[in-house]
Length: 84
Figure: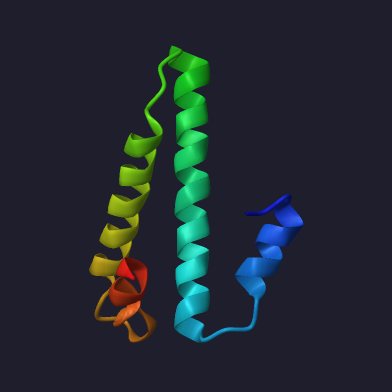
């Protein structure tokens, strides 16, 4: 759990392997994007998605990002890290 943005940013910047750091950045980017998308949907059309649908969208998008780049240097083992 993160209490504020500074804790989240510290977690992202924590010294880890390059691949774990990359996965953290991708995950945070995807989560923030989907939460903002949910917020806009609620504000503009008064419709909301279930938490399960939001989580499914996050998981699907992250898998797609990793799959599309799987032949790049730092992406080769990210899928197994994500699925753990």
